[in-house]
Length: 165
Image 1: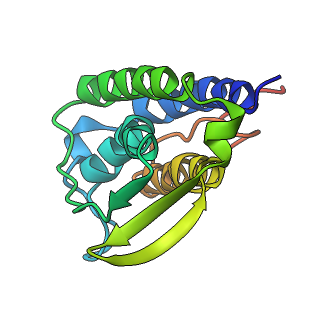
Image 2: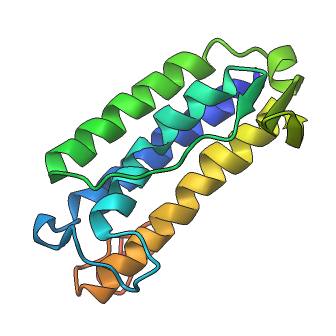
């Protein structure tokens, strides 16, 4: 089986879980922040929704400059869900074109002429696309808990939902 097939299966599974989390984000609280240094709920939720598409777009290149990161807040829950669906579709379209040899090729992140990171592309997919996505989804689940919104089951039971019982 090509390496990318297991990544695509994981994206499908995690996108379904991410959708469950995003469906619970209360629009009335989009401006809420747990701390002054934190992203707002609307910013974090849109970041989670947009990560698959945005990261996939940069990993198809061999070298990328450090992107400017400014995260606008979401305008609606519908925007979050559409962004997720479109981003996952874009990511899968991009990733399907990557054979095993391409996944082993080096990918570099630069700031001007300075190379910050060079790793095999599969490492970027694992760390910056997938792990980064899950990390921020975990943050989003904490935001939901702090807002007293029922947290869906992610990898097993939450205090609010038990898929096993």
